[in-house]
Length: 378
Image (cartoon, rainbow, N blue to C red):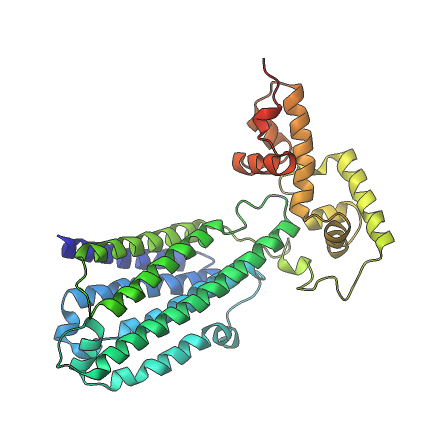
C-alpha cells in the first residue's frame, strides 16, 4: 500500500511539474527572466519525481548505467529557485545572459564536478551507492553516500539562505516604494521555501541513514506527499503571481542602492522643507486614499525626486513610505469608525487599503488596538 502511494504521489509530482512548466511556455511572457527561471525549476522538480519513480520501479536495477544522472540535475534546484527570486525582485528589463547565469549557478557546477568520479565507478557499485543494494560490500559506497548527502545539503542550504536574504531585502525595498504591498512581498514563496528546506533536510538525513536503519515505508509516503505539495503550490502561485515591477513605472532603480544616502546626504533644512510640503499635500488632497499611490507618484505631486522624498521619510520622519502613508489612512479610518456606523471594511477600502488583513494589521500597529475597539457601543 505504502509503495503504491509513493509511486502515485511521485507520478503526480512529475506530472504537475511538467504541466506547470508547459503552461509557462505557452504564455506570451515566457521569455522573461522570472518565467524562464520558474520553468527551469519546475522541470528540475519533475525530474526529481521521475528519479524516484525510476528507482522504485526497478529501472535503475535493470539499467544501472542510468543511476545518478537525474540526481545530478537536482543540484540545480537551488540555483533555479534563487534565479527566480532574483528575477522577480529585480529590474523587469533584465534578461538572462550566460555571465548572469554563471554568477548564480557556478557553485552547483562545481558540485557536479565534485561528484563526477561517481560516474566512473562500475555500474553495480553506482547502483549500490544510490539505492543501498546490488553490490558486494565496498568501503567506497558509504563514503559516496555521505559525500552526496553533505554536498546536496550544504549546497541547498547555501542557495536557500541566499534566496531568503534577497527576499528580506526586497520586502524592505517595496515598503519604500509602494503604499500597498500585499501582492509584492512574495510571502507565499517565503513560506514554501521553508517547506522545501525542511523537506530537503529530511530527505538528505533519511538518505544518510538509509544504509544503517530500517525505515517505515510511510515515511517515504510523507516525503513524497510534501514534495508533491510544494511543487503544486509553486506551480500554482508562480503562474498567478503578477510582476512586482513594470517597465515605465515603479522599479528598484527608483531608490539608491545599499548605503543609499551615504554619498548624497540631503541637508537637514531640505529634508524639513520636503516633510512640510508632504504634510500639506497629504492633508489638503488626501493623496493616501489612492490605493495605487507609489513613491514616484507622490514625489511627482510635491515636485521632488523619489530619492529625496525617500531620504526625507527615512532620515527625517524615521518611517518607510509604506508606514507613512498607512499612518494617514489609519488616522482617517479611526476617526470615521468613531463618528459613523459605516461598515468598517467599507471605511478601510475608502481610505486606501486593499484588504481586511492589511487594514487590521496597520490599525493594530499604529494604535495598539483592533479597528472594532474604536466603534462606540450602541
